[in-house]
Length: 74
Image (cartoon, rainbow, N blue to C red; front, side, top):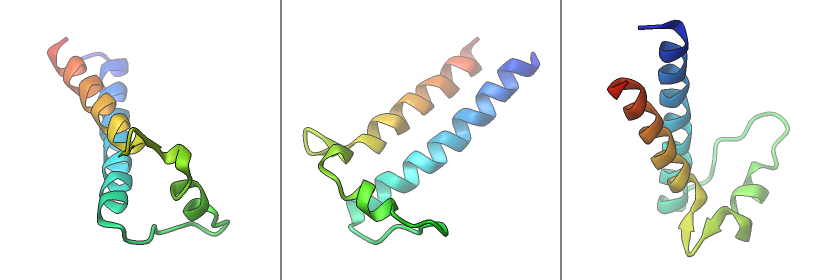
């Protein structure tokens, strides 16, 4: 498997892990774990964080899983 395929797959897994965490936090209604700068609660609680009542992170999770599947199918 070429290096770009492995890199794409690893990055898709990392992205799906982060998107999965953000989706779970949104659906469970628990506070986010923020870094030093903070402010992620403001962004995560914004009306821009949802589309049609569903968290944007859920769409990102689906996108990353599709990318990982396409890399494996190639």
